[in-house]
Structure formats: C-alpha cells, structure tokens
Image 1 (cartoon, rainbow, N blue to C red):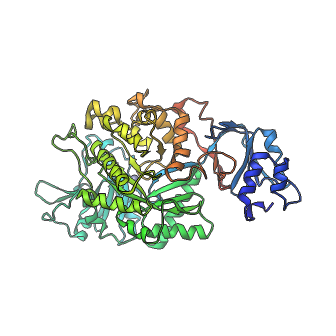
Image 2: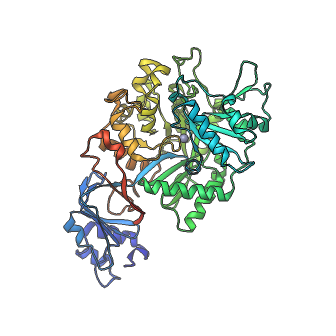
Length: 571
Ligand SMILES: [Zn+2]
C-alpha cells in the first residue's frame, strides 16, 4: 500500500481510522486503491494503555506508514491484516505510548556514555581511581570531562578539591561536573590553562571557591564554570555525531521516542539535521537553545515548535537560578544548613529588566519560553515575568514552562495554574534529592518540594522528563519515582513526602501526553490514537499489575517510532 505517500493521505487515514477498512467511507477515501488498504504493521495480543480517554484500553493497534490507523480488539484489528503486513505478537504484554522526555541534554548525554562515570562512586578512593583510569585512556592534549560526581555518597560527605585528583591527572586537564551541573571540579592543569588565579574575581551569578591560602581550590559554581569552559576546545562535528548516535541508540533501547533538548549548541542542531537527512533519527527532537540567543531564531521567523515531526525548534531555555545540591537555587529564606545563604540568581536575571525585555521580545516573536527555576523565589520571580509577558503581548496559547519547578512557595500554586504555566519536572530528582533535601531546606519547605500531587490537584499540567544526563534517561525510573517517592538510599520505602505521590496512570500521562502538550504536539503524539504518529513501546512486564516497587526493573522489549521498529530485545 502506498496510500500514505499520496497527497492528502493523512485525511484518508483519518477517515479509515473512523470507519474501519470495510466501511463505505474507507472505500471512498481509498478510491485510488483496488482494495481496502492493509496495515504495514500490526501490534496485537497486547494490553494497550492508550492514554486516550476516548478508548483507554485496547488489545491491538494498526499502523500505516508513520501513523496509527486503528485501535481495537484483536478481531477488529485483524481486519487490517494484508499479505505484506508485519504482525508483532506482544504476547499479552503491556503496550504504552512512546515516552517523551521533556528535558534532556542529548549530545552531552551521548558524550557521557563514553565519559568517566562518577555518579555512583561510593567513596573518595573509588572516585580518584575512576578518574585515573579515564586519564590513562584519554589521548594527550584532550580534556577529561563529564563525571556527574556526587559527594553526598561519601563519608564524610565533603566536597572534593583539586589536591585530591592532581596526583593522578598530571598534565591532562580535567573538569568534572557535579551531577547537578551547577558545580564542577578542575585540576591544577585546567586552572593553569584557564589562567585563573587567587586574584580572579567571582563573576556575577557564580563563585570560584578558594582554599585556606586563597588559591582556587578547584571548585567552580554556576556562572564561574565558564572561566574553565571557555578554554576547552569545542567538540568537532565527528565527536558530536558519535555522541548523537550513541544517544539515539540509548533512547531507542529505553522506549524514549521523543526528547526535548534543552540548551543544545547550534552545532548539535546541525548534527540532528544531518541525521534527519540520512533517515537516522529514531527519536523525535524538539530544540530549545539558549534564551540569550533568541534573536537568532526570531530573525528567521522561526516560531515555537517549528519544523517536522522528527526535528523541530522554536523553544528557548533560560535560567532563573542554580540548584539545590549546589546551594545555588534561589529561596525566599536562607538554607537551613548554610545560614545567611539564600542561593544565587543566574547572570541572565541580573539586572531583572534585561531578563524581562528578552522574554517579552522572544515571546512577541512567537518563541516558547522554557525557564529553569528551582528555588521558591526563583520560581516566583519567573511567574512574575511570565505575567509581564502576558501584559505586554496579550493573552494567547503560549505554554510558558518552568523547568524543574522543584520548591514551590505554597502561595504560588494558584497563579501557576491561573497563568497556565507548565511544570516540566523530573521525578527521579525527587528520590535522589529526597535523601538530603530536608537537611538543606527544613521540614516545612519539603512539603511543597517536587509537589506532583498539589500541581495536579490545582490543575497545573505536568510534563515529565529526566534532565539526562543529570539523571538516567530510563522512563521506568521516573514512573517508579513519581508513584513511590522511595528515596535511593532505601530510607523512605513508603515514600518521601508521601502525600505528593501520584498514580501510575497520572505519571504515564505526564510522561507522554503531558510532554507532548508542553511542545505543542498533543494532536500529533502522546497517546495511542488513530491519526497520531505511531510511537509505541512494548514493555517486559505489566506496570499496572506489578508491585510499584518493581517498576524500576521493567525493561523495553520493542520500541516503535513512526511505525518503524527502532529497537527490539536482542538487537
Ligand atoms: Zn537541564
């Protein structure tokens, strides 16, 4: 069947979807064919959670080309079978829409798959050992980067400094990010190359940490990270291409059929365009490059969600503040464990009038604002700015997003909902930060931390993701985190701030339809609905039947993106 390649195929497919292959309407719609069209692909003998309220459960799905044409019982879908139809028997397994990760750093994630992994280094000794091994396999002159270290795993949980790693790194420049991306550790070789000395001043929105003698101790926070980053040579096209391919493979294996890339470099977007041209994209990508460069997109007349189903742009990612882990999230009241410190506003927010002007003008150009805000005052200030944007440019469906939305002031839920702002959240962070967040912000503020339940109850739309490579890209970890809130240290088996748990159905919707809505694509994807793109996943186990504690162990058997099998177990 070539119906899907003809002009107007989509409306034909929609009609077919409505009336079925044997109906009069489908014969009219398929008038150019000699017979009722057959499906290219059928997934059958499945327990399908469609995330479509019109038909929440079904047994089988028929696909023509890139689109779903029918959902129904096994018998109903069998009518779509033709001699060339590929039939996948799901063996009674659970099928869900492909996952849409609303917040990733895709090329960085791909790079990290080959970088040193420090995230789970349980001790300082192991941390040093892994860095030494990475240095040994790094070509001379190249930097060692990545890492995602987490000192809270160690005892005592004190921050590392350059003296810890200088012995094993020698002349190889090393700049290793803390897992939250708001702090990084440089060795002496890197500090030397960057020309940072005891006299280098802190930039606005950043801090260079000093040792007792006043020399830089190797730790750089937020805006100060650029003091080192600016001397690291940019990645080559080949390096980016390799990383993007690694990331695509990884996403396909995990059932992630869409990602929303936050702060891609333009060179990353060029690589995606090249992969699109070669037919190599297996995950759909929406790009939100830095807000600071908003005019680049505006100049070309690009508006939110511009492009094709596989590759789009038109988002903008800005920053209000830092992170909780680095004590740079911006709060109304000081951190409980560092008195007098309320966090840091990002350099973009200083002065506030420039941030406001940038947001108003970018919005007027039709671009979508996705602003990172973690501390309660950081979030509050962004809500103020979103209100200013509406005042300046008028009411319309603009879908402003707050990325992370971690620590809410109770007073702000109502206007979050009233302003139709989307909470783009990463549930895995809750079971990660939940290990130590109370120590940092006390027993009251944690009640509205990762407040999934309150957001939904107040009518705020959630979009779920991971912030990969800050957290694992695996959606099962996110679903598990949202429904159990069981912290990674095992200390809260019944949930950390359990009143903020949500149901699996709600979490799945946030991770599929919710994320699609957050990129203006809810009519194209996000549920298993006739007419929508055929992005779906067959899971190893029925997440709705098993003990929620075991959701994190569920794997993907088959990933289908745009009607194409992009991953199968054993491949
Ligand atoms: Zn991020």
